[in-house]
Every structure is written in structure tokens, then in C-alpha cells.
Amino acid sequence: MELVFEQYQAVESTLTSLGTVAKAIGQNGSINLIPSNFKNDSVRVKVILKKEDGSSLGVTCSQKVSDGLRDKSITMGHLLNFEVLYGESGIPFISLPGGGLVEFAVKDLKAVDYKVTAVDFADLIA
Image (cartoon, rainbow, N blue to C red):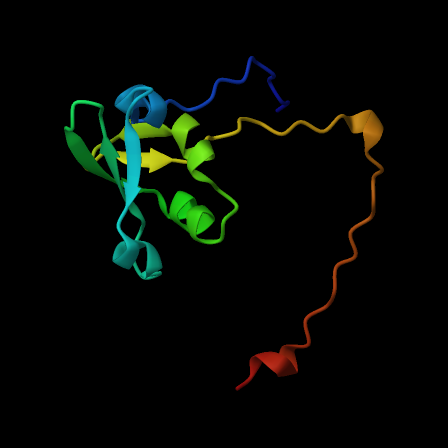
């Protein structure tokens, strides 16, 4: 048997994009945080997206987005470009961008031998 190379195709997601946060609320919209929710690390961050006409909607952020907002590695400016996704759960959420593949050229790598360490079976007896 040999390897058969074909064109790689990413697995299709069951998530549907509802567009970016900026597109959803428009140029004159706003993003609101609920202080008690934001300070509570045991729950994901919920933001209130508000349009210029005053209509609003609460949308939960993914865990990674919530963590990033809380540790300040993600700002409100970043959030504007993040997508609102809708999946099988029926609940829209704000997601961190996927980022695609990370490619490493073989010519830029150096092969390194992996040394297997033996297991001391005496350590497995409790």
C-alpha cells in the first residue's frame, strides 16, 4: 500500500456565519458589557449588541473569546471583526477567527531523532 496524495479539502463546518459583529450592528451601533457577567469567570462573556435604532440582542462569546476579553488579549476593536456563528444548538455566539492551516516547509526544518524512554514497570504498581 502506498500513500495517495490528493488536494486537501477542509471538513465542512455545521456552523453558519451570520456575519461580523460590525456588520450586525452597523457603524452607529454599540457593544455593551454587563459588569457582573464580565467579572464572573465561571460563565462566558455575554455582550449586548445594539443597533442605531435602539434594538438590541444579547450574544454570548465563545470560551476563547471570553477568556481573551478578560485577560485583555482581545479588545472591543477585535470583537468588531469576529463572526457571529449559528450552529446546531440554535444559539448564536461570537467566535474567534479560525486562522486556517500553519505550513512548515521541509527545507526549513531539521530532522531530530526521538529518543524513547523506557517505562520502569515497578512505577506502575500502586
